[in-house]
Amino acid sequence: MFQNKSLFIFFGKPGCGKDTACNLLRDMVGSGLVTMINSSDIIKEAFELLGISFNRDNCAKFFISLSGEFPGWLSNAVRNRIENAKTNIVFYPGARKETDENLKLIFPGTKVIWVEASADTRYKRIRGRVSGGKAGEDSLSRADFDRQDLASNELYRPSSPDFEIDNNWDIANLRVQIQRLQRCISLSPVHSTQA
Image (cartoon, rainbow, N blue to C red):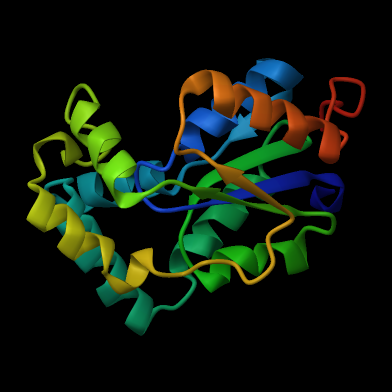
């Protein structure tokens, strides 16, 4: 039954370090005990099926247009993957909308984590990504980054996250914050069993 799943939803703008935070926490808990579900993977699969070029501009347009006509479409796809996850612990980096936060109504005990980083820090990280980043972000101009940063799909912030991470620093500082998060949510390999 999926009600026994521990869901951790990571919110934050592109380049703030949601995936990095999840990877660090997963490594501390045990990678075989955690399922990671990323919305960009779901969007990329949809783009491949539709023959749409996967880039940040198209992602924003696609997300906004579908959200108007089919609100919660991405959250429903994520929900399905959570329900079918083979582990009891699920990390969801890349949450963007209130409908993502509403997953906690379906999965009791869900923890919402906000990851923060300044626009300058995020832009530098995105530009430094290899292999085109998640959606060709490595070639974004600063003007395009700033414009896309204000798109409606990037503006949602959870009203009361369970934990906040300030990721304007280096990886060592992030690791310390993730250790604090792990202690705060009492997430350890002992807590985790296979579904």
